[in-house]
Image (cartoon, rainbow, N blue to C red):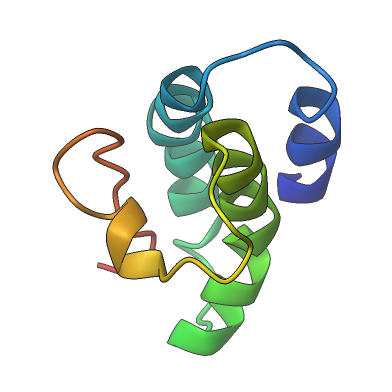
Length: 84
């Protein structure tokens, strides 16, 4: 599900803020709904959502080594953490 959405959005001409909105409003609620019946560790969930973070970094023109903490800041992306 996450890899499919990342592959779909990667070639599109979207801003990083658009991809962050799609992550927060579409992908994260779907993921939370599916995770209600299964238990995963924090590392597993982070590995599931990593492709979307890569797309957001690429669209924002950030390096691939940019810390995730920068993406979780309130501005400019305000991405919600999937684990909390």
